[in-house]
Length: 172
Image (cartoon, rainbow, N blue to C red; front, side):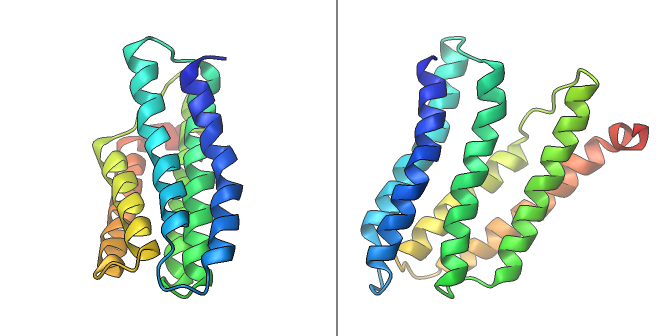
């Protein structure tokens, strides 16, 4: 197993540590340890992709596990934010719906030998979600507004994936 794949797995392994940290910090208005764990886990997403591309460490395992690790981390963080009443539940529902729709679209593409690469909109969505989660965990002013931006980017990027691949959808 190469370093990029190990970083991807480390992101999944960090999720329970993040949740335990949240549990112990939940009565505080600021969750610094949780935020640090989330930030480190999020950074591994950028680092594993960079290393995989730079050193040609791209594997089928990484192609499958990297987006899965992202979803596990972000959904865990969003669920925490809903539980803490920092964001409304409908936001996580919309984000999860988009993630599943794009995952299904990618699975359909894979069955036809095609690959749907991450778009710039998808990357912007991910960055905005990470920033929003960190701001909310750290009780930084305007964090909810950044979350709104993340939700809008999530919706728009999801629609973009669907529109650009509607021929693929109509084939099934």
